[in-house]
Length: 366
Image (tube, rainbow, N blue to C red):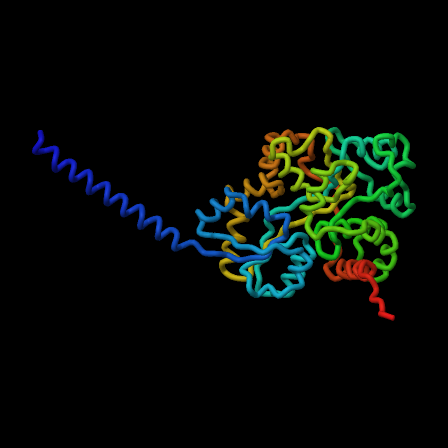
């Protein structure tokens, strides 16, 4: 028995060492196949690309993503030649990037409706004054009524049943900086549609017509942040007194619901009626960028992780599953009343006019 045991142990040892060498070499070979893909993204997708599960899923498919954050308007107008891909928010920015980079390939990855983060007492006041409708767990805001209120300077304490928010402030949705941020640009696009008698702004005459109605939405806010994350963080931390209504991506609210006690019972979501989608289109500038674009579009794991990060895609069942897991079953599976944004050029014209009014005039020294 002892004579047999020695050779058997030697065989086991050789097999073990061989297996270790094989798996080590295999792992090194696998790592050598990983490519680094560099891009510029809108800040609203930072949570997705920094999700450890997304990082792992991409690496298993041979990709490591490095990114810079920038506003979609900045991405659309900058030199992007150093990147493999750019990933702005909104159709206008993506369209402009495709025109500037005719050899690029576009991948429609996911989307998010624009929504308003608000509070149950605020929603009740708006319902009582026929600004909003209670849809059984979420609300809709009549955008025509809202624009009329802003145009007429209506204040919260002038509304009936306003005891819960009896303040002498004008009724105004907080947004990001329209000169830098896509979420504010989508808000502008939506408001311009309403102000243009429910038609997409198509020319300079339309812009001249709507500008007096839409500019106060942004000029009256004072200082605004460039990133959609900041006003939503203020909403979460500072409460109703600071942030009664905040224009956000629906995805932010859904993603926050994954955090324990992230969404309290008095926090509610209100959808503009009509609303507008922020579509997230990846523009691939190189072959590595194409590899990423195709992977995000076709890989089931990454598709699921996009939904778990709050975004919507073509898989409604995945969206329903995430809603159920996060006690958000009341949110709509689909939204019917959705409008399209104007062209990039028309949107830029409106933004530039607002920017001129936001920029202080230079003063000469005596």
